[in-house]
Image (cartoon, rainbow, N blue to C red; front, side, top):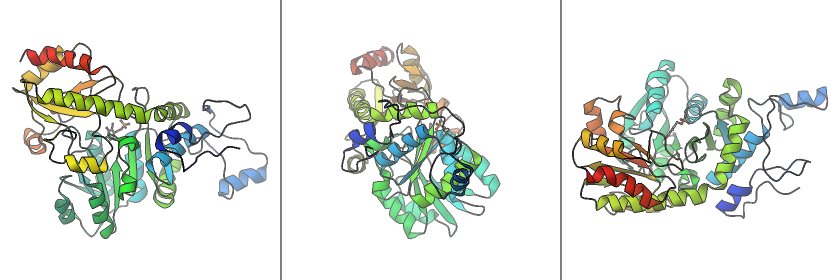
Length: 396
Ligand SMILES: *Cc1c(COP(=O)(O)O)cnc(C)c1O
């Protein structure tokens, strides 16, 4: 039988090939195993599987060949030992926290993270005695002074949404380890095609597969990648028991997404770079946020830790909320939606949507102004995206 992975091969090759264990049918494409349980040859085999003495499928809440195929492929691409797939990005974060923390523990998180993640930490984990503090992701000293004796986990999302600020992953990993903590990175915006946090010293990578891993806005899923102990035992234990499981059909979609991940991420970033430069020179635009621009305060860190600056570009138009809304409403092609990581370019007004729950003061602190627009640049022709934006911009 052919190897299911060959470590001497490059990223794109492994993204296409890893993990498929061809069945006796000789299928070329990866099969979808739609079965909830698996049959044993004998009572003794069932006993051995349940006892963990023998590997193999048992029950689809925690063992399914299609899901495993996705897990093996993503683990390889992130450079981790093990991956656990979950029903959504949020359940990946929940399973990580439940697996690695307990009552009385302290969580240290970067401030600008996905909105639902903040709610999970503040409203739900707090009920179980886990307290969260937030720090500026660019300020390593602030992380150092926020550490408490009971701090267990660092959680960071980089680049941040929507202002594309970066955390220095290697520096945060060193700091975490010096204090007996683990570093978890939500790698949703870069994916392993552009950034591999485990190679920079992080312990855990978390994904919302819903975004770029799918890449075409079709399915909800998540994943956690790390080593045998933390992810293979502790996080997997939560998944196996609590059951926020990825469906085999969704796993198959993400498998197909991984096959094109590298060329898609390169294309997203190439178009985003062109749009950022165009917007920067536009007379109706006040400021552009993109790690590939010379005005980005962390451009050199971006070049060190990312293969490309990514697909998210944010910009402030001249004027206030009304001007921003005018540009958004004048588009005919771009999708007005908060989702990202799709072949279709999406346009968002963060201050009234993703960051709408914050008070005006909190938004000011976070730098989310009323004239800010976020683009998640898709795979359309750049000139067509420009033409669609130009309608509103030229009217300002
Ligand atoms: C979307 C998103 C999540 C949550 O993922 P779901 O799949 O929607 O549950 C978490 N983190 C980031 C950065 C996201 O963009």
